[in-house]
Image (tube, rainbow, N blue to C red; front, side, top):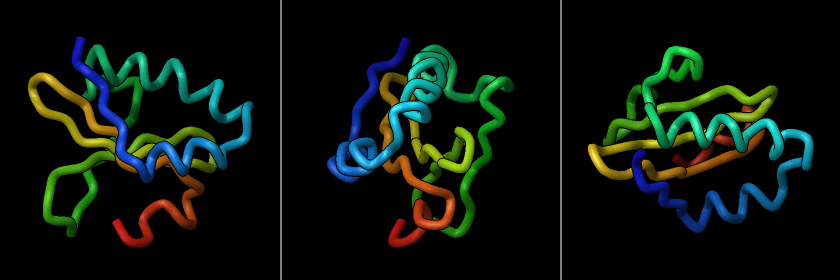
Length: 87
């Protein structure tokens, strides 16, 4: 299992998420820590950004993350209309 790190922006985003969506995100984050490229996540690589990052759909919300051999960094968690702004 990889260590999960969160950014300040992620911490701000998660406070705005409805409790129902947050509950759906918990098993996704647990699965990310085991295997960030698991097919059940249906993650996609984001393009046109400077560093490799991926997104996972959780209802109308998106979780943006990146990973290395030992860590997973959770960058953003917001509605699909807003999540890519400024990223």
